[in-house]
Length: 58
Image (tube, rainbow, N blue to C red; front, side, top):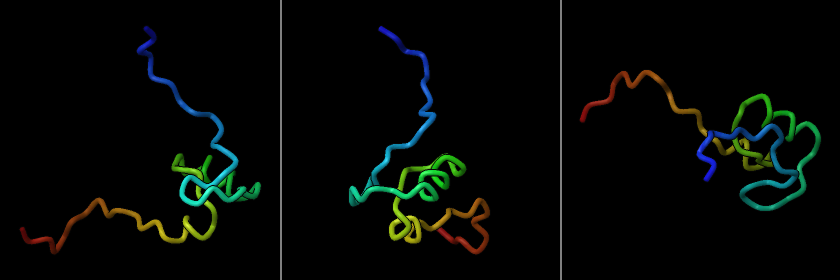
């Protein structure tokens, strides 16, 4: 059994949410961000999580 961590060097050519074929720019954006392969519509919906939780009161 191979338990070595593997990295994906190229994202898929389809959006992970809707399955639309990605453009070269969308694939490049996924490579640069290290994130999921998303079309421009779904990439716009991603909200970055702030490292600083100032103002958060449990």
